Length: 489
Image 1 (spheres, rainbow, N blue to C red):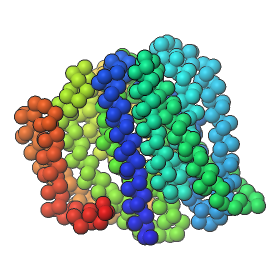
Image 2: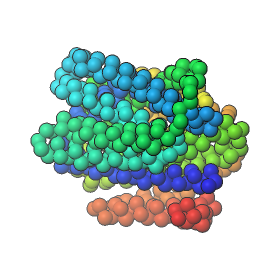
Image 3: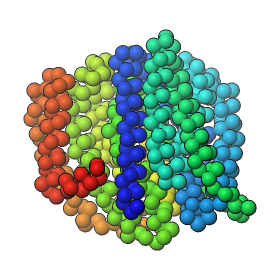
Image 4: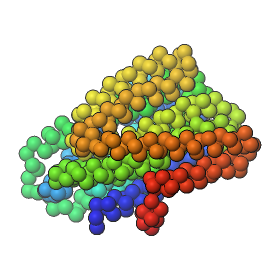
């Protein structure tokens, strides 16, 4: 099987699983926001999850990505080291998770008071379980990525999303409110973690004959490489979650609900880009090890152009239809999320590039450079949020996210260029064509928007924009229908 066929097959598996995960997330978002929780309860739930995501940094560190990198490398040159790598990683994780979970259990009330919301204490206490199960859920997905068996990552993710939806709805309907929804997350991730660990043990760990000795210094290198990855992951999670946490600190749970809803919609839109980045990134480690950077460049450039061909028009369309979409789907109580979603539509383009690029840099051995860039921009994002949220509300948080992420994306692409020598002129011409297509599509959608008065007409306007985009993409030569049919088939 060629590398392109392998990537396409992996992308299909990741995309199907991501579709299941995002569909379950969208249903959960819709059911909780529209029917089961008021904006205060919805905001309280996701404010707590934002805090727990930051706490989880200390439990996860960078071990998952680090072992994935060495699994990818040693599967080629010394497979007997892989059982040793997995054993040492699990041991390290158990020790670190135990320390972090105990500390959270001990100080959850003090943390809630310090953040100005004592009523969040039960969420943080339950968060002890959340951190443990989600840590192993995430670890198994990344480990399968290192083995380049993305179908198992995909299955683990899909199971977690589906089980989370089922149990969150059951617990809320049973009368446990927003806290019940959090326990739904816990049960869903626990099931996914159990599935992933089982597959990791029976399908991978047991199939390798361990080398007689653990390679000298490999355990140390595993920990050392986790340091920049920890910094990058920390900066990434802080960058994604600190705005939500600060909105809750400076404003109200309802404001958190508006901001969270807009961000969740952008996450849904970004699913294909995340799947593609997750799929192609392990191949860069193999290409670099083999000295085959030309093929790596070709794959990255093709993936980048296809991603931008999809996401630049999608972001423009999202900004145009944000108002009727939110008020018709989630109700007038969430109208405050409209302007946030419009600002974050620019973030959709930036994050699509990041999803495609960031993991690839780890496998190219440039984790340290990415960690520095992420750390600086995350710190800038924190500072901007502290300045803008009290003065501009939730819009300030969205503007801070877009401004700082623009810098991070520029640095990431520059680092990729330094490694792969991208063909900048050709990329620029294609990007210009994509922007022209986007402009023509946007004009057509804007002309019909005044006639939109119900959900069917809204989806009709979206379908019109998609049809115009598809026609122009084919006529411009940016999309070859035969290639699309071959990939889909």
